[in-house]
Image (cartoon, rainbow, N blue to C red; front, side):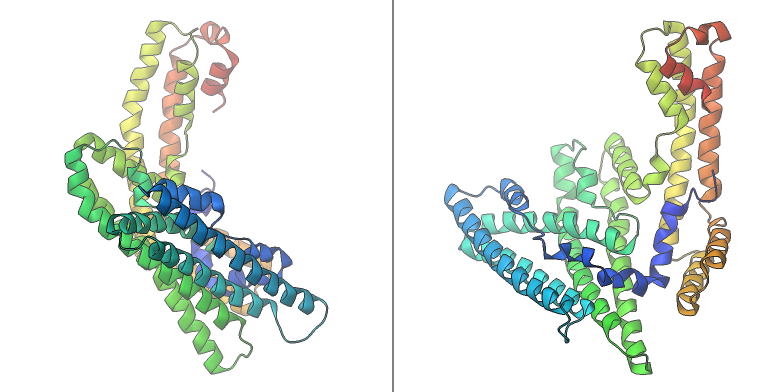
Length: 401
């Protein structure tokens, strides 16, 4: 495992130190895809499809959406006119001001769509509850992805997506229902807070001036923004083990593995042993006794791999919570690099030296080693002549490593 193998886990460590540089991407015209509607008609139809609305309620909801889309397009056209005037040399606006004005307006439009649809349902409490769940699910889908792209952090997990493929028994569903309701509402509030703090930080970052008061405003906005990230991550970290406790053993394992995969996908990348086993399973040219031997080797390897995965996820979660001095050292380094405009060669060299010390590196290396050991054992099941007669895909899977 190279020292860069952990880089996907650590990109978020740079985000705090480079927050302003990352956010001020609005200096490029490409950022004006912000003018595109974020809740498309297809998104809205998907939200409706998850609700038990009557035909009349669906028609009323669609009418609200069409009004929202028209008003959105009108506002976007007016903002585009401001962009055109600025690009034509008319003084007054800046990219930063236009960007944050539009983000605030877009958020207000989306909030209004949610409340207007709810109002169109009248006093139908069941329909209103169903619509609220659809809204919360859409916000998780949209904003969790936005957080990752805006901040270059690992994608945060949606526990509902982790639970979705698991076939819970009626008793399990009843047991976890109160936790799920609390999770959805807490997460929704957290994501709404993130949107507002994101806009606040951008406004502070775009303000001119380098005096003490201006720097204080930027610092306060950055701290508040960072706290919303931590709070959102903490909601899932706190709830996942509580949900797992209420599930039957098989479902518990599936849920915890799914959550670990969401928290740290790098730990669950397909390994050489998995690729080799898959290749062997897909060919009929492997004799039964050889196939059984390969399956036995994999069965011995899999628990070791799973334990290392759990250890990697535990390290990453501790890292996210700031429990390693190295994380604070990395954050301080990138703050210094941004402040002092450190030359790229010096900056990158020091960054690589710090990243090489990440506590997950030895675990990633161990995961790779035990996978290679398993593949070598699989290879030893075949003589050279037997291996030469196997399909190319199997030979490559057993010898490439």
